Length: 295
Image 1: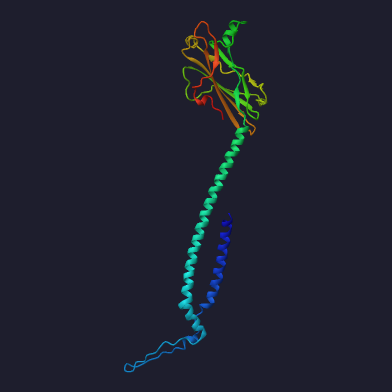
Image 2: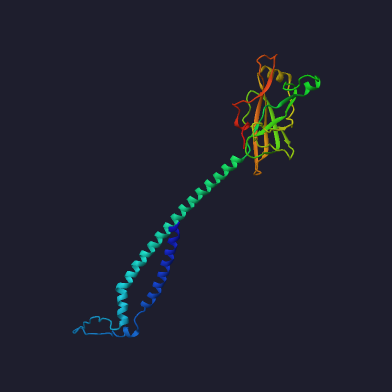
């Protein structure tokens, strides 16, 4: 940085000295006066008696100074002028290179500062996870058999609700929307398709986990009601296909930036016997990242 500041000062002083030098040369380059030119008259001779005349040296001081300048001083000044031009080009090139290096170092420092700030924000951001499993409600079984167990049993009509969220980050999260979808298949497609979007209450907060007892937030929004045929229901009980539920929670962090937390469950029979059924929600580790990523 000191070199970058010193070189422009040297360059300015050089230009000032060149200007002073040019003004002084204007005075020296004055041609001799008319009296000097008239000192040498035409000298003639005949063919028989040629007249040989030697060029006399200038008699006036002004003429002598002009001759000295023309033969000696002017070539020297022209040579040094060429050297000066070369030095100016070299200094300009060095300044350009230094500016490029300064720009590169500044750019690296800016990127490092941005990455550091981004890391700090990421460290302070909420870390949202689900706590336990949701509840699958058999809507038709609940209406047809009151007083009997009607949850966590697949039926033709049903939905999922009571999802609990916990925050393991350093700052609270403010959820504002929950999207849900479901599918009956062996393997989910790569891109999730959410069929229902529920707007949450504006005062919901997922608090920070401060001790071993988690402070969770239970969202009672119901997922889309699924409708199963007898064949699909029988295949689910036998384990031929799986019933999937996937969700996306939209929330804002402490910087008011929008973020997402995606999660997915597989609702399967834990027992191998189709008669002695016990359905539960499990997480498939081989599921596509698009169903479980967080931003």
